[in-house]
Image 1 (tube, rainbow, N blue to C red):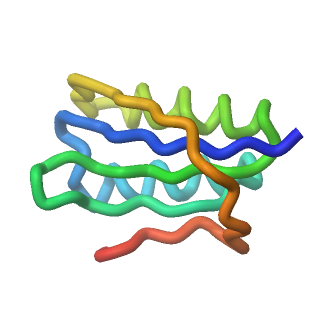
Image 2 (cartoon, rainbow, N blue to C red):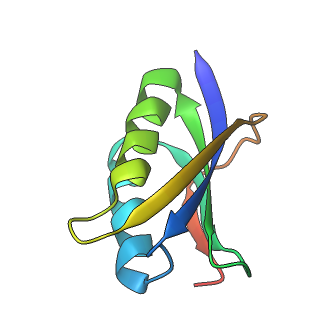
Length: 91
C-alpha cells in the first residue's frame, strides 16, 4: 500500500551534508519526494512510496546523520503526488 507524509524538521537541518544524507538514504529505500529549506530555518521533507519504506525513510529523517541535532519533528499525512524521484529543492 502506498503512503505519503510531510515532515517538518527543526534543528541543525539546513546544511548541505544533512540534505545529501537524507537524499542518499531515502533513495536507497525507493522513496520519492523532495527536501527543501524553509525560510523559518526548518526543513520540509515530502516522502511517498510503499508504506514500510516511507516509515523507514521518516525514521532516518528523524535521526539524521551522526552529528545532527534535530529538536523537533512535525509529521502530517499527505496526498500521493506521483513523484518520479527524490529531489533537493533550493539546493
